[in-house]
Image (cartoon, rainbow, N blue to C red; front, side):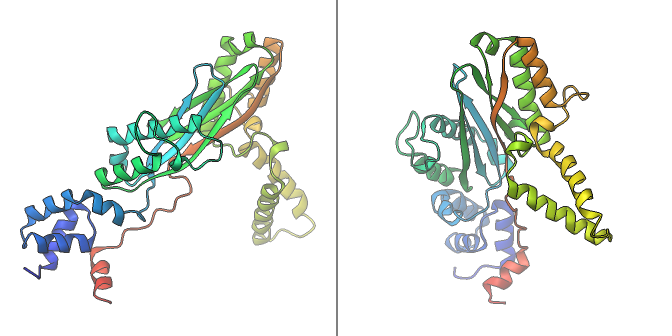
Length: 310
């Protein structure tokens, strides 16, 4: 059977979400039998993985891991195409191996080239095999690692079932202080603050000059649009920048735990209580799909027109 109806192709596509050409080829191979064509699509998982290599993977999980001594932690975002597949046990297990590899890899290394923990091959080879098995594109999008030398700890926090993950490094003046319940609570609360409020920078002094300049230009354009005179705009912009800094700098933010204080005020209060320094060193916050543009799926009619050269 060399020809199949487009209605049958559409029905197979609706059932399997496979590509239009894949559905047409499967129906031809199955001689127009829909159920047999479904089986053919399912059996061609590995071939489909190659065709899905360019598919947008914008769902997935953020995973973290911290060593037992609290001195080293890793965070990774691993993406897949659908939220349903992100809950697949094999995908979840793969993300755990990815962050395990991140703990051992050289910072900045290509994680795909690292050995697959507890198995054979590399992270990339195991990723490709899982793509073939699950039929969805998978990407190890990004990873980071934080460490502490001396007293302090690296703490991780994962929110919304893996949609948001945070890694935070906090230093203190003594090992005893690092084990104090008040210190542990502050670190955990600060990680939750980062997850909830999405700060971009640790404090104002660490804000890059280009970030401030870019935001100032945005405010200036808004004021011009509003008709504000040239002489008045610089002062207004400074006020807006000060307010903006309180939104995007962690230590300047109002605490979500104690709304009467900033994170910096809580840090200073803890340092006084413990009688030693407490310093937030660095943080990493990953949110699944952050910054990935999700394309709209073309409808069936437009795909048919494209195939026909229309």
